[in-house]
Image (cartoon, rainbow over all chains, first blue to last red; front, side, top):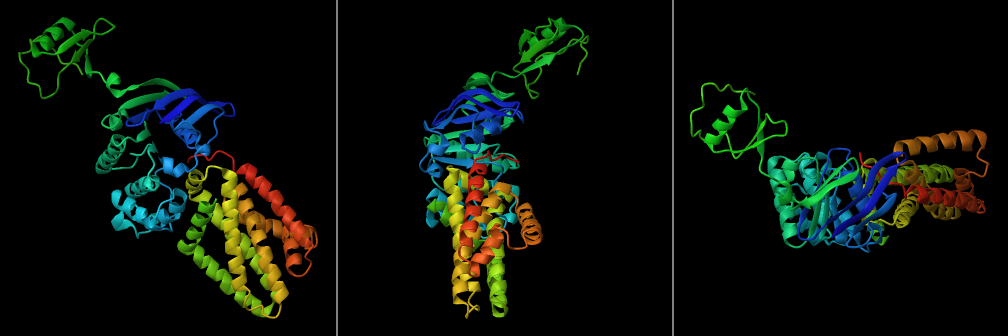
Length: 273
Length: 198
Protein backbone atom coordinates (compact mmCIF):
# COMPACT_ATOMS: atom_id res chain seq x y z
CA UNK A 1 0.00 0.00 0.00
CA UNK A 2 1.44 3.32 -1.10
CA UNK A 3 0.05 6.62 0.05
CA UNK A 4 1.00 10.25 -0.30
CA UNK A 5 -0.66 12.93 1.80
CA UNK A 6 -0.42 16.54 0.66
CA UNK A 7 3.10 15.91 -0.51
CA UNK A 8 4.89 19.09 -1.49
CA UNK A 9 8.40 19.65 -2.72
CA UNK A 10 10.08 22.89 -3.64
CA UNK A 11 13.53 23.43 -5.04
CA UNK A 12 14.19 26.99 -4.01
CA UNK A 13 11.53 29.05 -5.75
CA UNK A 14 10.37 26.22 -8.00
CA UNK A 15 7.39 24.23 -6.73
CA UNK A 16 7.87 20.76 -8.13
CA UNK A 17 5.01 19.16 -6.19
CA UNK A 18 1.95 20.82 -4.70
CA UNK A 19 -0.12 18.87 -2.18
CA UNK A 20 0.04 15.62 -4.11
CA UNK A 21 -2.36 13.14 -2.56
CA UNK A 22 -3.15 9.69 -3.88
CA UNK A 23 -3.13 6.01 -2.99
CA UNK A 24 -1.88 2.92 -4.75
CA UNK A 25 -3.73 -0.11 -3.44
CA UNK A 26 -2.45 -3.68 -3.11
CA UNK A 27 -3.57 -6.22 -5.67
CA UNK A 28 -3.77 -3.51 -8.34
CA UNK A 29 -1.44 -1.82 -10.79
CA UNK A 30 -1.56 1.95 -10.49
CA UNK A 31 -0.35 4.09 -13.36
CA UNK A 32 1.12 7.45 -12.49
CA UNK A 33 0.74 9.49 -15.65
CA UNK A 34 2.07 12.86 -16.63
CA UNK A 35 4.22 14.69 -19.12
CA UNK A 36 7.94 14.98 -18.61
CA UNK A 37 8.57 17.50 -15.88
CA UNK A 38 5.13 17.11 -14.30
CA UNK A 39 6.49 15.77 -11.02
CA UNK A 40 6.23 12.00 -11.47
CA UNK A 41 9.88 11.25 -10.83
CA UNK A 42 10.04 13.71 -7.93
CA UNK A 43 7.08 11.98 -6.28
CA UNK A 44 8.59 8.54 -6.70
CA UNK A 45 11.98 9.61 -5.40
CA UNK A 46 10.31 11.14 -2.36
CA UNK A 47 8.46 7.90 -1.73
CA UNK A 48 11.77 6.07 -1.84
CA UNK A 49 13.60 8.35 0.55
CA UNK A 50 15.94 9.66 -2.12
CA UNK A 51 14.53 13.17 -1.76
CA UNK A 52 13.10 14.84 1.28
CA UNK A 53 9.64 16.40 0.96
CA UNK A 54 9.24 20.06 1.84
CA UNK A 55 5.96 19.19 3.54
CA UNK A 56 3.42 16.39 3.58
CA UNK A 57 4.09 12.68 3.70
CA UNK A 58 5.01 9.86 1.37
CA UNK A 59 4.24 6.53 3.02
CA UNK A 60 4.75 2.90 2.15
CA UNK A 61 2.74 0.50 4.28
CA UNK A 62 2.05 3.40 6.58
CA UNK A 63 5.64 4.45 7.17
CA UNK A 64 8.25 6.68 5.58
CA UNK A 65 10.90 4.84 3.59
CA UNK A 66 13.60 5.78 6.09
CA UNK A 67 11.61 4.16 8.87
CA UNK A 68 11.28 0.80 7.15
CA UNK A 69 13.30 -1.79 9.00
CA UNK A 70 14.38 -3.75 5.97
CA UNK A 71 13.43 -1.53 3.06
CA UNK A 72 14.54 -3.80 0.23
CA UNK A 73 12.36 -6.57 1.57
CA UNK A 74 9.34 -4.30 1.48
CA UNK A 75 9.89 -2.17 -1.63
CA UNK A 76 11.57 -2.88 -4.94
CA UNK A 77 12.44 0.12 -7.10
CA UNK A 78 13.26 0.31 -10.79
CA UNK A 79 14.61 3.77 -11.61
CA UNK A 80 16.81 5.41 -14.20
CA UNK A 81 16.81 2.43 -16.51
CA UNK A 82 19.03 0.38 -14.29
CA UNK A 83 22.25 1.47 -12.63
CA UNK A 84 25.17 -0.87 -12.26
CA UNK A 85 28.92 -0.65 -12.22
CA UNK A 86 29.96 -1.42 -15.80
CA UNK A 87 32.83 -3.61 -14.65
CA UNK A 88 30.59 -6.06 -12.81
CA UNK A 89 28.86 -8.99 -14.44
CA UNK A 90 25.09 -9.24 -14.06
CA UNK A 91 25.53 -11.95 -11.49
CA UNK A 92 28.26 -9.97 -9.74
CA UNK A 93 26.03 -6.91 -9.52
CA UNK A 94 23.25 -8.92 -7.93
CA UNK A 95 25.68 -10.58 -5.54
CA UNK A 96 26.87 -7.18 -4.29
CA UNK A 97 23.25 -6.13 -3.87
CA UNK A 98 22.25 -9.36 -2.13
CA UNK A 99 23.51 -8.42 1.38
CA UNK A 100 21.43 -5.24 1.25
CA UNK A 101 18.33 -7.22 0.30
CA UNK A 102 18.96 -10.13 2.62
CA UNK A 103 19.05 -12.46 -0.37
CA UNK A 104 20.99 -15.71 -0.71
CA UNK A 105 23.04 -16.86 -3.70
CA UNK A 106 20.20 -19.19 -4.58
CA UNK A 107 17.86 -16.22 -4.75
CA UNK A 108 20.28 -14.43 -7.07
CA UNK A 109 20.21 -17.39 -9.43
CA UNK A 110 16.43 -17.60 -9.21
CA UNK A 111 15.91 -13.95 -10.00
CA UNK A 112 18.32 -14.06 -12.95
CA UNK A 113 16.31 -16.88 -14.46
CA UNK A 114 13.02 -15.13 -13.73
CA UNK A 115 14.01 -12.06 -15.74
CA UNK A 116 15.63 -14.06 -18.52
CA UNK A 117 19.22 -13.03 -17.90
CA UNK A 118 20.61 -16.43 -16.91
CA UNK A 119 22.52 -16.60 -20.19
CA UNK A 120 24.01 -13.12 -19.80
CA UNK A 121 24.80 -13.47 -16.11
CA UNK A 122 28.54 -13.68 -16.68
CA UNK A 123 28.69 -10.79 -19.14
CA UNK A 124 29.82 -7.42 -17.83
CA UNK A 125 26.94 -5.00 -17.42
CA UNK A 126 28.88 -2.41 -19.37
CA UNK A 127 28.15 -4.52 -22.43
CA UNK A 128 24.45 -4.93 -21.76
CA UNK A 129 21.86 -3.56 -24.13
CA UNK A 130 19.23 -1.20 -22.74
CA UNK A 131 16.70 -4.01 -22.55
CA UNK A 132 19.13 -6.16 -20.59
CA UNK A 133 19.92 -3.33 -18.21
CA UNK A 134 16.23 -2.88 -17.59
CA UNK A 135 15.82 -6.59 -16.89
CA UNK A 136 18.74 -6.43 -14.48
CA UNK A 137 17.10 -3.48 -12.75
CA UNK A 138 13.92 -5.50 -12.33
CA UNK A 139 15.96 -8.42 -11.03
CA UNK A 140 17.65 -6.12 -8.50
CA UNK A 141 14.28 -4.86 -7.34
CA UNK A 142 12.94 -8.39 -6.91
CA UNK A 143 15.92 -9.72 -4.91
CA UNK A 144 14.32 -9.05 -1.55
CA UNK A 145 10.94 -10.48 -2.61
CA UNK A 146 9.20 -7.18 -1.87
CA UNK A 147 5.40 -6.91 -2.03
CA UNK A 148 5.58 -3.30 -3.26
CA UNK A 149 7.10 -2.36 -6.63
CA UNK A 150 7.77 1.21 -7.74
CA UNK A 151 8.92 1.78 -11.31
CA UNK A 152 9.80 5.03 -13.05
CA UNK A 153 9.09 4.87 -16.80
CA UNK A 154 10.11 1.22 -16.93
CA UNK A 155 9.14 0.74 -20.56
CA UNK A 156 11.57 3.39 -21.83
CA UNK A 157 13.89 1.76 -24.26
CA UNK A 158 12.17 -1.62 -24.22
CA UNK A 159 11.07 -3.15 -27.50
CA UNK A 160 7.51 -4.49 -27.83
CA UNK A 161 8.59 -7.93 -26.65
CA UNK A 162 10.20 -6.38 -23.61
CA UNK A 163 7.13 -4.29 -22.87
CA UNK A 164 4.93 -7.39 -23.10
CA UNK A 165 7.26 -9.28 -20.79
CA UNK A 166 7.19 -6.48 -18.23
CA UNK A 167 3.45 -6.22 -18.46
CA UNK A 168 3.07 -9.93 -17.70
CA UNK A 169 5.46 -9.70 -14.79
CA UNK A 170 3.74 -6.72 -13.20
CA UNK A 171 0.26 -8.11 -13.70
CA UNK A 172 1.19 -11.37 -12.00
CA UNK A 173 2.80 -9.44 -9.18
CA UNK A 174 -0.43 -7.52 -8.61
CA UNK A 175 -2.52 -10.65 -9.01
CA UNK A 176 -0.50 -12.24 -6.22
CA UNK A 177 -1.50 -9.38 -3.93
CA UNK A 178 1.43 -7.04 -4.44
CA UNK A 179 1.22 -3.29 -4.96
CA UNK A 180 2.57 -1.88 -8.22
CA UNK A 181 3.06 1.83 -8.96
CA UNK A 182 4.58 2.79 -12.27
CA UNK A 183 5.01 6.14 -13.94
CA UNK A 184 4.74 6.84 -17.63
CA UNK A 185 4.06 9.67 -20.02
CA UNK A 186 2.21 7.48 -22.52
CA UNK A 187 -1.32 6.38 -21.69
CA UNK A 188 -1.41 4.06 -24.67
CA UNK A 189 1.55 2.16 -23.33
CA UNK A 190 -0.03 1.48 -19.96
CA UNK A 191 -3.65 1.07 -20.99
CA UNK A 192 -3.26 -2.68 -21.12
CA UNK A 193 -1.52 -2.81 -17.82
CA UNK A 194 -3.04 -0.54 -15.18
CA UNK A 195 -6.14 -0.80 -13.07
CA UNK A 196 -6.01 2.68 -11.55
CA UNK A 197 -4.76 5.93 -12.96
CA UNK A 198 -3.35 9.01 -11.25
CA UNK A 199 -2.74 11.95 -13.57
CA UNK A 200 -0.29 14.63 -12.54
CA UNK A 201 0.38 17.92 -14.29
CA UNK A 202 2.36 20.91 -13.11
CA UNK A 203 3.07 19.23 -9.81
CA UNK A 204 -0.60 18.71 -8.94
CA UNK A 205 -2.80 15.63 -9.09
CA UNK A 206 -5.54 16.34 -11.60
CA UNK A 207 -7.31 13.01 -11.51
CA UNK A 208 -7.20 9.77 -9.58
CA UNK A 209 -9.63 7.11 -10.77
CA UNK A 210 -9.88 3.54 -11.99
CA UNK A 211 -8.96 3.22 -15.65
CA UNK A 212 -12.42 1.98 -16.55
CA UNK A 213 -13.90 5.35 -15.63
CA UNK A 214 -11.40 7.17 -17.79
CA UNK A 215 -11.65 5.29 -21.04
CA UNK A 216 -14.70 6.21 -23.07
CA UNK A 217 -15.47 5.20 -26.61
CA UNK A 218 -13.16 6.95 -29.07
CA UNK A 219 -14.88 9.46 -31.32
CA UNK A 220 -13.95 11.18 -34.52
CA UNK A 221 -14.52 14.88 -35.18
CA UNK A 222 -15.83 15.44 -38.70
CA UNK A 223 -16.48 18.75 -40.45
CA UNK A 224 -17.77 19.16 -43.93
CA UNK A 225 -19.48 21.52 -46.31
CA UNK A 226 -22.94 20.46 -45.25
CA UNK A 227 -23.25 18.85 -41.84
CA UNK A 228 -26.73 17.53 -42.53
CA UNK A 229 -25.53 15.51 -45.49
CA UNK A 230 -22.74 14.11 -43.40
CA UNK A 231 -25.19 13.30 -40.65
CA UNK A 232 -27.32 11.37 -43.10
CA UNK A 233 -24.39 9.51 -44.53
CA UNK A 234 -22.94 8.51 -41.22
CA UNK A 235 -26.37 7.69 -39.90
CA UNK A 236 -26.93 5.28 -42.77
CA UNK A 237 -23.60 3.64 -42.02
CA UNK A 238 -24.78 2.96 -38.50
CA UNK A 239 -22.55 5.30 -36.55
CA UNK A 240 -23.43 6.92 -33.25
CA UNK A 241 -23.72 10.68 -33.80
CA UNK A 242 -23.54 13.82 -31.74
CA UNK A 243 -23.09 17.45 -32.53
CA UNK A 244 -20.06 19.13 -31.02
CA UNK A 245 -20.03 22.40 -29.09
CA UNK A 246 -19.59 24.61 -32.12
CA UNK A 247 -22.82 23.37 -33.72
CA UNK A 248 -21.14 22.45 -37.00
CA UNK A 249 -18.76 19.63 -36.17
CA UNK A 250 -20.02 16.09 -35.84
CA UNK A 251 -18.70 13.62 -33.28
CA UNK A 252 -18.84 10.18 -34.84
CA UNK A 253 -18.48 7.00 -32.80
CA UNK A 254 -18.55 3.31 -33.50
CA UNK A 255 -16.83 3.24 -36.87
CA UNK A 256 -13.60 1.59 -37.93
CA UNK A 257 -11.81 1.69 -41.29
CA UNK A 258 -12.82 -1.89 -41.96
CA UNK A 259 -16.51 -1.34 -41.35
CA UNK A 260 -18.26 -1.59 -44.70
CA UNK A 261 -20.45 1.26 -45.89
CA UNK A 262 -24.10 0.30 -45.80
CA UNK A 263 -25.24 3.00 -48.16
CA UNK A 264 -24.00 5.01 -51.03
CA UNK A 265 -22.89 8.49 -50.26
CA UNK A 266 -24.86 11.26 -51.92
CA UNK A 267 -22.90 12.74 -54.76
CA UNK A 268 -23.02 16.16 -53.16
CA UNK A 269 -20.61 14.98 -50.46
CA UNK A 270 -17.05 16.11 -50.60
CA UNK A 271 -14.50 14.52 -48.36
CA UNK A 272 -12.69 16.80 -46.05
CA UNK A 273 -9.47 15.97 -44.32
CA UNK B 1 25.30 -1.06 8.31
CA UNK B 2 26.82 -4.55 8.26
CA UNK B 3 24.97 -5.15 5.02
CA UNK B 4 26.58 -2.04 3.54
CA UNK B 5 29.98 -3.24 4.73
CA UNK B 6 29.51 -6.67 3.19
CA UNK B 7 28.20 -5.18 -0.02
CA UNK B 8 31.12 -2.76 -0.33
CA UNK B 9 33.77 -5.36 0.45
CA UNK B 10 32.36 -7.83 -2.05
CA UNK B 11 32.30 -5.06 -4.67
CA UNK B 12 35.93 -4.28 -3.99
CA UNK B 13 36.90 -7.85 -4.63
CA UNK B 14 34.63 -8.39 -7.61
CA UNK B 15 35.31 -5.31 -9.70
CA UNK B 16 38.46 -6.08 -11.63
CA UNK B 17 39.69 -2.49 -11.82
CA UNK B 18 39.34 -2.34 -8.07
CA UNK B 19 41.38 -5.36 -7.04
CA UNK B 20 43.92 -4.59 -9.75
CA UNK B 21 44.41 -1.16 -8.15
CA UNK B 22 44.85 -2.77 -4.75
CA UNK B 23 47.30 -5.32 -6.11
CA UNK B 24 49.25 -2.56 -7.86
CA UNK B 25 49.34 -0.53 -4.65
CA UNK B 26 50.69 -3.50 -2.75
CA UNK B 27 53.28 -4.22 -5.43
CA UNK B 28 54.46 -0.63 -5.58
CA UNK B 29 54.52 -0.37 -1.81
CA UNK B 30 56.65 -3.50 -1.55
CA UNK B 31 59.09 -1.99 -4.06
CA UNK B 32 59.31 1.35 -2.30
CA UNK B 33 59.68 -0.37 1.04
CA UNK B 34 62.91 -1.95 -0.09
CA UNK B 35 64.48 1.47 -0.62
CA UNK B 36 63.00 3.75 1.99
CA UNK B 37 60.59 3.24 4.84
CA UNK B 38 59.56 6.89 4.80
CA UNK B 39 58.76 6.83 1.14
CA UNK B 40 56.69 3.71 1.68
CA UNK B 41 54.75 5.48 4.44
CA UNK B 42 54.03 8.42 2.17
CA UNK B 43 52.96 6.14 -0.64
CA UNK B 44 50.77 4.02 1.64
CA UNK B 45 48.94 7.13 2.82
CA UNK B 46 48.33 8.41 -0.69
CA UNK B 47 47.29 4.94 -1.81
CA UNK B 48 44.81 4.48 1.01
CA UNK B 49 43.32 7.92 0.42
CA UNK B 50 43.15 7.42 -3.34
CA UNK B 51 41.51 4.00 -3.14
CA UNK B 52 38.91 5.29 -0.69
CA UNK B 53 38.12 8.30 -2.87
CA UNK B 54 37.79 6.17 -6.00
CA UNK B 55 35.60 3.51 -4.37
CA UNK B 56 33.26 6.04 -2.78
CA UNK B 57 33.23 8.49 -5.67
CA UNK B 58 32.46 5.78 -8.22
CA UNK B 59 29.13 5.17 -6.58
CA UNK B 60 28.12 8.71 -7.43
CA UNK B 61 29.75 8.53 -10.82
CA UNK B 62 27.98 5.33 -11.88
CA UNK B 63 24.80 6.28 -10.02
CA UNK B 64 24.97 3.15 -7.86
CA UNK B 65 24.81 5.43 -4.80
CA UNK B 66 21.09 5.24 -5.42
CA UNK B 67 21.10 1.49 -4.76
CA UNK B 68 23.07 2.00 -1.56
CA UNK B 69 20.63 4.64 -0.35
CA UNK B 70 17.66 2.45 -1.16
CA UNK B 71 19.29 -0.37 0.79
CA UNK B 72 20.26 1.80 3.76
CA UNK B 73 18.08 4.93 3.84
CA UNK B 74 19.57 6.13 7.11
CA UNK B 75 22.45 7.98 5.56
CA UNK B 76 24.68 8.20 8.61
CA UNK B 77 24.74 4.41 8.77
CA UNK B 78 25.61 4.30 5.12
CA UNK B 79 28.54 6.64 5.72
CA UNK B 80 29.81 4.54 8.61
CA UNK B 81 29.52 1.35 6.56
CA UNK B 82 31.52 2.92 3.75
CA UNK B 83 34.08 4.28 6.20
CA UNK B 84 34.63 0.92 7.83
CA UNK B 85 34.93 -0.81 4.45
CA UNK B 86 37.55 1.71 3.32
CA UNK B 87 39.41 1.32 6.62
CA UNK B 88 39.49 -2.46 6.27
CA UNK B 89 40.79 -2.28 2.71
CA UNK B 90 43.41 0.29 3.69
CA UNK B 91 44.65 -1.73 6.67
CA UNK B 92 45.04 -4.94 4.70
CA UNK B 93 46.63 -3.20 1.70
CA UNK B 94 49.10 -1.25 3.81
CA UNK B 95 50.01 -4.23 5.97
CA UNK B 96 50.78 -6.35 2.94
CA UNK B 97 52.61 -3.62 1.04
CA UNK B 98 54.87 -2.97 4.00
CA UNK B 99 56.30 -6.45 4.27
CA UNK B 100 59.60 -5.31 2.76
CA UNK B 101 59.98 -2.62 5.42
CA UNK B 102 61.42 -5.27 7.66
CA UNK B 103 63.76 -3.35 9.88
CA UNK B 104 61.42 -0.53 10.82
CA UNK B 105 58.82 -2.53 12.70
CA UNK B 106 57.55 0.42 14.74
CA UNK B 107 57.03 2.51 11.61
CA UNK B 108 55.26 -0.35 9.93
CA UNK B 109 52.90 -0.68 12.89
CA UNK B 110 52.22 3.03 13.04
CA UNK B 111 51.63 3.33 9.33
CA UNK B 112 49.25 0.38 9.32
CA UNK B 113 47.41 2.04 12.20
CA UNK B 114 47.26 5.43 10.47
CA UNK B 115 46.17 4.54 6.95
CA UNK B 116 42.62 3.53 7.96
CA UNK B 117 42.16 7.06 9.29
CA UNK B 118 43.38 8.56 6.05
CA UNK B 119 41.05 6.20 4.21
CA UNK B 120 38.08 7.43 6.23
CA UNK B 121 39.17 10.98 5.36
CA UNK B 122 39.05 9.90 1.73
CA UNK B 123 35.51 8.56 2.10
CA UNK B 124 34.44 11.84 3.70
CA UNK B 125 36.01 13.97 0.96
CA UNK B 126 34.48 11.86 -1.81
CA UNK B 127 31.05 12.01 -0.14
CA UNK B 128 31.18 15.81 -0.15
CA UNK B 129 32.68 16.27 -3.58
CA UNK B 130 30.91 13.31 -5.25
CA UNK B 131 33.23 13.29 -8.24
CA UNK B 132 36.41 11.26 -7.90
CA UNK B 133 38.34 13.30 -10.47
CA UNK B 134 37.63 16.55 -8.65
CA UNK B 135 38.33 14.99 -5.27
CA UNK B 136 41.70 13.63 -6.36
CA UNK B 137 42.73 16.72 -8.28
CA UNK B 138 41.66 18.93 -5.40
CA UNK B 139 43.62 16.83 -2.94
CA UNK B 140 46.70 16.87 -5.12
CA UNK B 141 46.45 20.65 -5.28
CA UNK B 142 45.95 20.82 -1.53
CA UNK B 143 48.98 18.64 -0.91
CA UNK B 144 51.22 20.65 -3.18
CA UNK B 145 50.13 24.12 -2.28
CA UNK B 146 48.68 24.10 1.22
CA UNK B 147 50.71 21.38 2.82
CA UNK B 148 53.87 21.49 0.72
CA UNK B 149 54.57 25.04 -0.39
CA UNK B 150 52.80 26.96 2.35
CA UNK B 151 52.96 24.56 5.26
CA UNK B 152 56.36 23.17 4.31
CA UNK B 153 55.18 19.84 5.67
CA UNK B 154 55.29 21.18 9.19
CA UNK B 155 51.90 22.85 9.61
CA UNK B 156 49.10 21.06 11.49
CA UNK B 157 47.44 19.79 8.32
CA UNK B 158 46.08 16.28 7.74
CA UNK B 159 48.67 14.70 5.45
CA UNK B 160 51.54 16.36 7.26
CA UNK B 161 50.15 15.02 10.50
CA UNK B 162 49.83 11.57 8.99
CA UNK B 163 53.45 11.58 7.83
CA UNK B 164 54.74 12.81 11.14
CA UNK B 165 52.62 10.42 13.17
CA UNK B 166 53.59 7.42 11.11
CA UNK B 167 57.27 8.27 11.36
CA UNK B 168 57.33 8.58 15.10
CA UNK B 169 55.56 11.67 16.40
CA UNK B 170 52.42 9.98 17.66
CA UNK B 171 50.88 13.17 19.05
CA UNK B 172 50.28 14.21 15.47
CA UNK B 173 47.67 11.46 15.41
CA UNK B 174 45.35 13.84 17.22
CA UNK B 175 45.69 16.42 14.48
CA UNK B 176 44.93 13.83 11.80
CA UNK B 177 42.03 12.57 13.87
CA UNK B 178 40.63 16.08 14.29
CA UNK B 179 40.76 16.80 10.55
CA UNK B 180 39.08 13.47 9.81
CA UNK B 181 36.37 14.13 12.37
CA UNK B 182 35.65 17.54 10.83
CA UNK B 183 35.55 16.01 7.34
CA UNK B 184 33.20 13.29 8.57
CA UNK B 185 30.88 15.85 10.12
CA UNK B 186 30.80 17.66 6.79
CA UNK B 187 30.17 14.41 4.95
CA UNK B 188 27.39 13.42 7.36
CA UNK B 189 25.61 16.69 6.56
CA UNK B 190 26.20 16.50 2.84
CA UNK B 191 25.17 12.86 2.48
CA UNK B 192 21.69 13.83 3.58
CA UNK B 193 21.25 15.86 0.39
CA UNK B 194 18.65 14.80 -2.12
CA UNK B 195 19.99 12.38 -4.67
CA UNK B 196 18.92 13.90 -7.96
CA UNK B 197 18.18 11.95 -11.11
CA UNK B 198 19.93 12.44 -14.46
